[in-house]
Length: 226
Image (cartoon, rainbow, N blue to C red; front, side):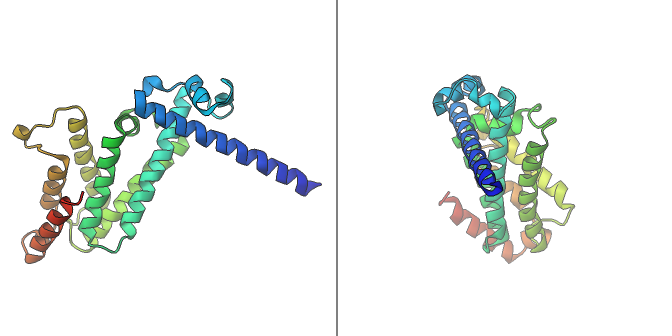
């Protein structure tokens, strides 16, 4: 009897989780198509094909739904960073590849990007979202640490180095998304800004040696493939 009840509860739980995931996916699509204004609980219910009250079983309000979208995408970014951290290729190339993951995400999903990185109220008071956001940062920091260990980057506190790279990247992305990036300002492309930043932050022994030249050649070759 207990096993039967447990099985039934597990089945109901899986169905509820599936519905929640579908609602989050629908919200993501609406966000991509029309920005935050297009995302409402009623709209996602219509997309998923459930009653208008169904989303309230999973989300307190619209803000909770948007937070769920952000949590999912932070998790996915963290997984992508972890994959780059585990990649056996050159550490600097792994770092650049991780940065390009964020660039691609911002270009393909600008509304979602703004939700994750430009909404000051989103993370406040949401423990699960805070964990996901910081987890993605830590996964990125692991790549930075690897670069420092192999002398690709200067040996300053890893968190500070990661924060500097993160802040510069997001600044370059915001300028491009906002249509304010100009060659006259020294901002021809995000890719060029990233490469310049990594060169400036390179460990002196690497930047001034033949190994640095090899890295630049490798990076230049990879640019053409991005």
